[in-house]
Length: 211
Image 1: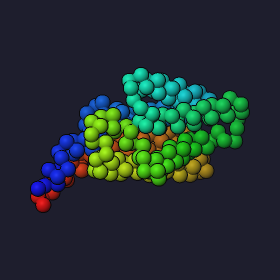
Image 2: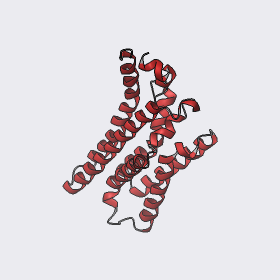
Image 3: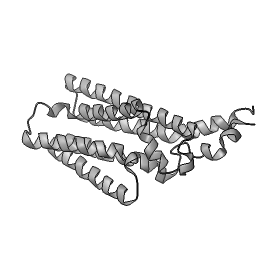
Image 4: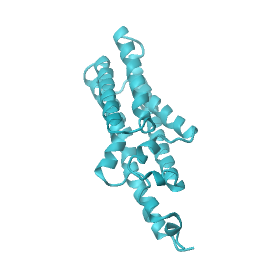
């Protein structure tokens, strides 16, 4: 009996996000407010950036809840709303706060904390997102969970590297566009991995010899 037969081929068809546009967008959507925040804050003002991030996050939460998505799939959005609300309050109270130059590195650090925290409690944040695209019967499939642990870890590493890089750029006084490029890369690279890794696992599983 092959590994695929042992676990069921449907499990390998539901390991996580694949090439389907809707599935991919479900993983990208939670981070769009952060990209908007980074871009607006770099070209305009951190107050407008925080406001843009908060509005986009609130819109995403309302839309997702109306679509029937559970709170377990909205961890990033929920934590993002809290972060943007705090930054906006600080920015409005003191536009020239000493914290202003560090908000971009802090944002990546916050996302890294969320990702690592979800792994620490064995509830990888991508699991809730991926469950929206697979039957409930497969939610506890060990391979489905393991793939999402790997994907969540990749996001966590990307956010951690981004936070460190942004802090280094701030200390070195790098040009304004550099932090924005680092921020975008921190989302694009793990997003590409998120799309390709489950397919690679499926391909590897189907090549395994029968046992």
